[in-house]
Structures are given as C-alpha cells and as structure tokens.
Image 1: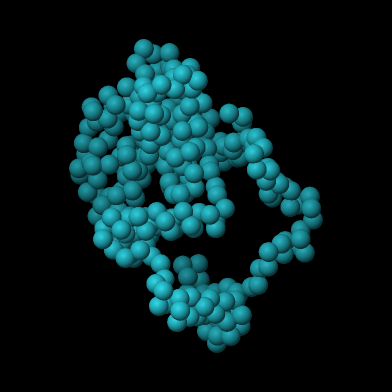
Image 2: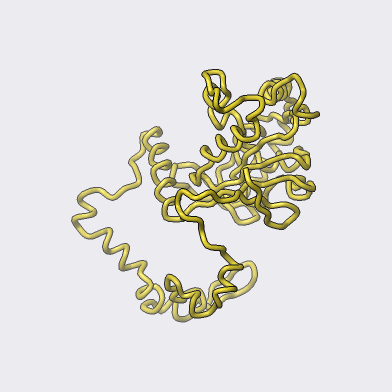
Length: 296
C-alpha cells in the first residue's frame, strides 16, 4: 500500500489496533517461558528476567518481543528506531516522524492537529514490545501504508527476524554517552519508585556523613578489586563458554590507552571522530548486516 492512500498512516494504525486479533495462548506460552528464566529485582522495583540472548527486562516487553518475532513481517521500506531506554528515544521519534511525514503534516504549520502535538512522539511511532504487541493482541500491521515507522528498545540480536532479513529495512540506532545515560536512567527509576511509594535510590545525609559513599568507592576501586583481593588474583569463574582465570578479568584500562596500541588510521576506522556540538551529522542505519549513513 503506498503512502498516497487516502487513509492517513495514523488512522490506518488506529484501525489496525482496533481490529487486532487476540491470541492469549501465544502470549501465555511465551509468558511461561519468560517466567522460567533467571530473574532479579530491578531499580524500579520490577522483576527483571535474563533473556537467553543476554539482556534483561521485565516480563511484558520480553513477551511482546517474542510475539513480535513470531508475528511481525517487515517490509523493505520500514524504518525502526532502536535505542536503549533513556538515550533520546522521544526526541528521535519526533524528529523522524516530522521528517518522514512532512508532506502529510507540514512542520511549518504545526497547529494543534499536528500528530506530534495531539498525540506526542510515542503515539506517532509505537514500540513493538510496549505498545503494539501487548495485552494478547496481534495487530494487522499489513494495513499500514509505506513507509511504516516503528520503535524498539530491543538489542539487535533480538529484533523481529524479518527486520534483520528484509532487504532495505532501515534501523535508526541512537546511542548516548554512558555517563549521561546512567543519570537519566537513575532519575527515571526514582520517579517509578516514588509512584510506587518506595524510597528513592539515593544516599541519605547520615550515610554520606558516615562515609558510606567513600567506602563504596574504596571497595570497588581498581587498586582494591584488581590487586588487593585474593579472589581476583587467583581462582577461576565458570561461564557457559568455560572456566576463566579471575586475574584475566581485571586490567587497568586507562582513558586513551588505545593510543599505545593503535595507529591513528586504525582508530579512525574503528570510531570516526564525533561531530562538534551543534554540527550536522548523518544518521546511521543498519542494512543487511552493514552500517550505512543517510541524510535526513
């Protein structure tokens, strides 16, 4: 179906959601499977399960990811926003929707009826695992006009398989400085804890005054963990791939140490210089296992 159809993309999606079939048996099958996985309590007080491909999440999105993998069929024209949580997802969704849908909804005339203003970014580009494949529903996304826009927090290895294999299907990946990501995730988790009437994740004044923070820093310092503990100097740890010497898990990786081992040309090939703040940089896409860039 082409984008010239009289039905708008958002209306077509609403129709598909309203007419979605339900498959409680499929959802229950995957819920049982996820419930058997190793789990632990997350920062926001949710139970987090370890997917067999190595990542953690709560039950609902992992089940949604599995249902999407079983039911979703990608098209070459699809565009999928793939991000870690708290890495700029809301912003990139708004940017992508405003760019791709600019002919149907001109951004210079962003009145109250513009989808980004009336629905918000997450209403315009929906997550596979959090919005589309939830509550036993299997939406008929074949009714959506091209190009279809989707989003996910799934890692590449767990994307619906047809997203990876569909020729030309674009994945817009957004990454963020890990330190900034940590702070955003911390604040986000604290909001959920407050909503659930739990104590925020922070050190109280008594802990700070008694030196708890400094004690954690000393305990986890490289000097202590890397050379001061017998358990890290000797012994082995069993992993699925075999036993690993504990001493091999600790190496002082100083900032900029790569300069002692890589040529400048090798460094540029591995990680091109980041653009200066405010400069225009190309967006990256994955296509058929390779990385490409395109201008938006």
